[in-house]
Length: 398
Image 1 (cartoon, rainbow, N blue to C red):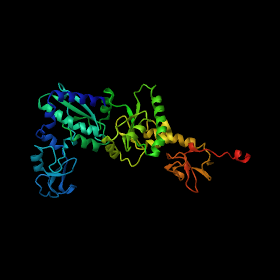
Image 2: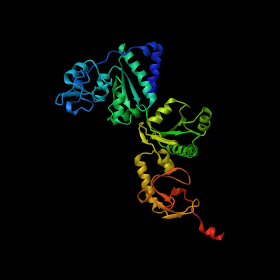
Image 3: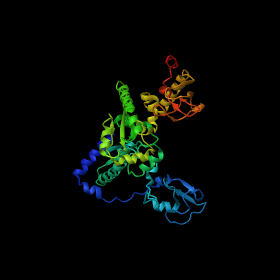
Image 4: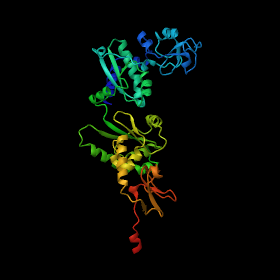
């Protein structure tokens, strides 16, 4: 994210030349309340529609079922109208949860209001811990600069995955943002400042994980083929993988990472634990695919690599649908049954609709879905590509 990096470097330079300690230890400025027009933007309901209790968040008295109530976005606490006017004219947070709900209000600001200001475009996402950590640094610098009449403004350009995550993150910020729904403006800014353009695979694995070690050479091969496939193209597409280690020690990490041609987070980096939790990684190896916009494309990258190799790129739902249709067409020419050298029983060709489904191939030990050859007697199952047919002619000659 080049634009974020530029803002970050500029702020570090400013801090180094303008008393960095003062920025870090300065008290927060007084809260800004809502204007009358912003106040009117808050939802207005009756007491009976409250879902977070019937107690006013300001005066703590009960709200009658027919009384008009202002609702706080984000936490859904209610105010008597008169309490809302008094409290919100001076504050922009809920008195119960301290949630800043300015980020939930779609207040339109004309671009002309930015004329004459130094503007920083902040490309960031709530799901990425380094972004969240840097946001507080940027808030401190932003408020310090503006308290000294520096005429500095920031515009948040989100890579969050959904509106709720965007709203929660934006509520922390005292600056402007591109609306979450304005995808065209966001894409235009991404292209102009070369912020995006890579499809990224997050590879969770470890040297002690046998399936991970077995899958890694296949992933390396596919990685190189995708990079070669994209090189001749002039559409700025790119693909990268980042290794997130669950190794027990530095030597194990170093030994395993030496087999990989891609990037990695440092051994023991706390970001690994945060990303593991965010993406709900239940086991390794796991390959999470993120799109050029930073949003999750699929959590089943490993399975797609096993099924389609480099053809899985860019791993989108549309591409997978196309590959599944191609596989269905190819399956029409496959034998309805086969004898595999690794199993004594006859194997029957099955799909999702005829008794198949997600499986672990008994030949290559990798995941599979869709079409498979399955033993109806004992459940043995292999990918069609893993079938090594028994040559009965050779057996008879012997």
